[in-house]
Length: 142
Image 1 (cartoon, rainbow, N blue to C red):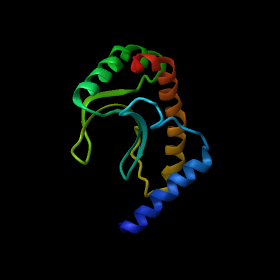
Image 2 (cartoon, rainbow, N blue to C red; image 1 turned 135 degrees about the horizontal axis):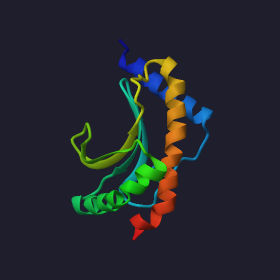
Image 3 (cartoon, rainbow, N blue to C red; image 1 turned 90 degrees about the vertical axis):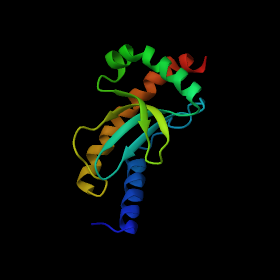
């Protein structure tokens, strides 16, 4: 069992180590589209990379429908393992829409033996998300 301080320290150590190992300027929140962002996620049970669509319901539905119109292209050409969840409930109770790719193995940020595998997964997967976005950016900005 880890104390809150130990857990926080390990999380910080992971993200610092990831940034040093893969010093890439990721797109993440800098999509220039309100409430449309890419995220890395790693906790004590799982890791994934996602495209999160937030915002008011009308805007979220509009962007989600645009994303779904590209689903076959995404699955064929970019992210064949992508999952789509129109209504994803965050821990804080907020509902978003999310496309994500999850690392299939069970991993834990508390286990340093998992870190390299997760870093490689992040580094391999996020560029595919970003490439898709760069190729279809105008779909979401119109």
